[in-house]
Image (cartoon, rainbow, N blue to C red; front, side, top):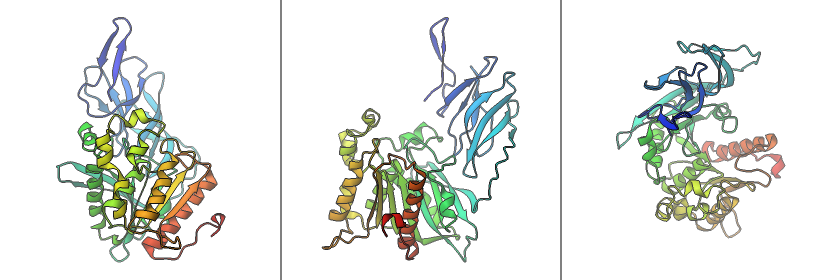
Length: 386
């Protein structure tokens, strides 16, 4: 993705940032026309950059935030935007264009303290690439009281764990004593085009090995319990959760939400087949489809899907569920009993948007994890009849 300027007088197009290895979005002109402000994912953040014709893009902000909704004051001296990170939900800030100094507006909102701390981890993988991620740790995690680990894989897949999310919020899990790893494997944005290309059309290769490598770094920490772990993901993250389940038994449980299961089925039935067809050739679909490895799945899985999901149609979840019961390494017994579970939302889509449904989502996930990761007995929400 590049930033280009069109001149109406000459009908010419100029690349404003040739050779810049980031993906600029949401351009906003400076009032005097001397440059453009953009945001771009960058190393687990999404700063604001100043781009002027003939100059290298200059990073304006130097915080750990992701910025959106950028507006420039009429005199061009200040920027107003929303800032967010895994330490703070979106909040308005004022930024000095000359030096990037950032000041939060006084909104009167009481931000309660988070139930833990945030740190970064990284590693160098076999092909020499650096892979990094955020690690949210619960209070009290230590060598004498290590925390169980949840590996969360982001969707997209062209995206990054770099901003606050109300739908996938690690702090709800941290409050229950889990450590949450938020990695950016191959295909993630903010690390250059080559980092994306490492996983392009090869979802089961570098993205998978990157995730396992960073998980290895996390569980090597004395404050992480490597005997109690789970993997979770939604959309493409759900695809990776399915792939993980079929390629390793290192995790005690796998949660897969709105996930791609059979790529030959998914490609022509999603609402955006043109998008996926750019890299999903028939050969790619065969080489990278999780359903071909169902017999190797020996880990209890929680499958979650909404019936009104058109991005990843419900057929993916239904087929995954059927094949888990009939063909996985943990099939249902003669009476239909199984360690796998299926949470089905008749009225939800690719995202679980209803507040009460979101509550049920977290309650079911936490109960499933408590049983298989913590070895505790946990009841499902009463609304489900349990």
